[in-house]
Length: 202
Image 1 (tube, rainbow, N blue to C red):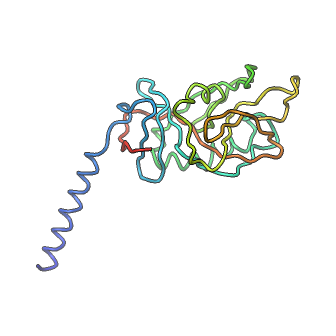
Image 2: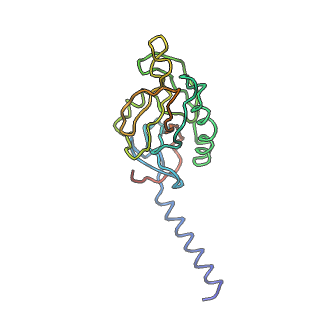
Image 3: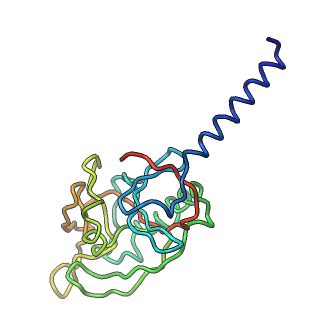
């Protein structure tokens, strides 16, 4: 077999592999709550909820570890938000395509129900209310650390000025003081649901 024939065979094999890869992909909108998927193989994600033409997801693992929340209980001015708005957002846009990562608004509400306004985001931590809502599907005991939410535990008036709500790998919710603690970042985002992904095992 000469070089020309070898190159032809290699090309045919590559085309066959590409067709097989395409055949293994599904539209994100067809996945159900709790299903796990990936696109590039770099990272796995879990479906939290379907919203018509968009899908809310969370990373299966921590995207960043040992992150300081910042010298504040206000997510809008925190180190975690800066990280989500820059490095993590860039990473997600490279993986999914910037046009497929939707901007949405999240309510900032303390664990004891006090409202702190809203925040516009593309990538963000889970909220306290979401941690409760999805507690049946978000636990991952393989995580190396707790992870931040964007929800303060309470307020200064109630004696909790410096505490942020955090979630353990098993799904237990508690508070960490932002002034001495580090935790992981396990981002949530909303994607257009017409993209193609590979459904995988957790």
